[in-house]
Image 1 (tube, rainbow, N blue to C red):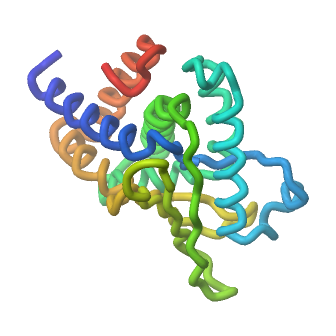
Image 2 (tube, rainbow, N blue to C red):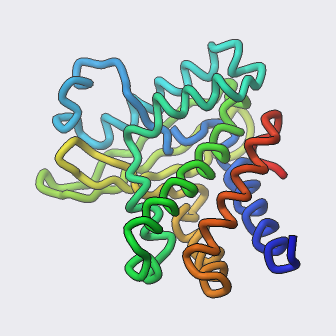
Amino acid sequence: MSPVDGKFFTVMRQISGYLMHALRPFIFSFFALLAPLSVNAANPQQEAPDVLIKRVSEEILDIAKNDKQIQAGNQQRIIELVQAKIIPYVNFQRMTALAAGRFWREASPEQQAALTSEFRTLLIFTYSGAISQVRNQRLDFKPLRAAADDTEVEVKSSVVQARGEPLQLNYRLEKTPVGWKIYDVNILGAWLVETYKGSFSSEIAKGGIDGLIKTLAERNKRLAASPSAPAKS
């Protein structure tokens, strides 16, 4: 690995470590978000964004607290939970486009698809690493401040812990034909997209979009080879 690649991986580890620490009590319900069981599941576009986030978040917390395999750190089970409960409610393409910034428009459709896939995989690993540490936290949601015809909103919440101050956890969502989708998350005052944007820009400046895709792919391979510690290298 070259010194340049080593520096990028160091930055990515720092980002992952930050997210792991911030989300340890909860995990992205990021983003976590899911194919839930409720009276609105068959017609999700009728579900208000704050109702969606609250339902999904509480469902994930409940599963994480009571699933013995998750509590034991079974990565396969954790990834299955993320795939089932988070992926359907996140707009990874928009999230990736925002993180790539102006370079996204310069990328070919094939490059955009590959970059989105690798970024999604990275986030899955990052957040999967926190789920097994969920214990007795609870969520507190703020009243939604949005007009009925808004197509983008911010849902504000906090993770209440037995000890320490509550952790800020806010979501930006957009209204789509198939329902509300998350495209960014704010953890302790820092938006996830902005957290990655600087590293992405630096890597693209050195090796282009293909260079970033390659670096993320290598990072994901390393994470996949370390099932006991998915957010570390």
